[in-house]
Image (cartoon, rainbow, N blue to C red; front, side):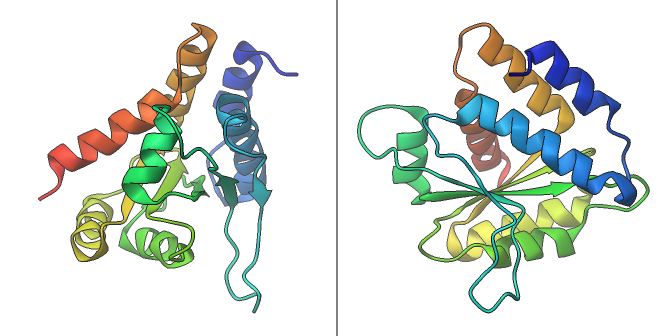
Length: 179
């Protein structure tokens, strides 16, 4: 089992860029599993739709529906039965509206209305505007988590606190900024 220091070092050592996408995805999945499993279930990695047309990066099952846990609240609020994570290890390319649309298109009604894009940098303004439109049109929340937020959650867990609270904070911040 990796330590928090090891996970942080490996995440920071992963170079941005297309040639290292797999390394970035693998370390992010390891971090998210460390942070959220349990209560979430082990992720489905690179699951494809039946037709094989769509391939999602990672999907964590959320079976929390009773009580006051953060994931139970998220499930009730956003019907988030499956938490979709997409990983963008971009260097010179922008994370724009196309990446947001692609992420939205990977969600199906049974999965719920929450997706999270983990990236090496913040998406551009067009991506932020597109996610606002997506929320206005159908109530789907797409969060942007940078490497810094992943690291922050690792330290939250190391302190014995709940890293899912940061996810809820990001959802609430999105609601506050939405227009």
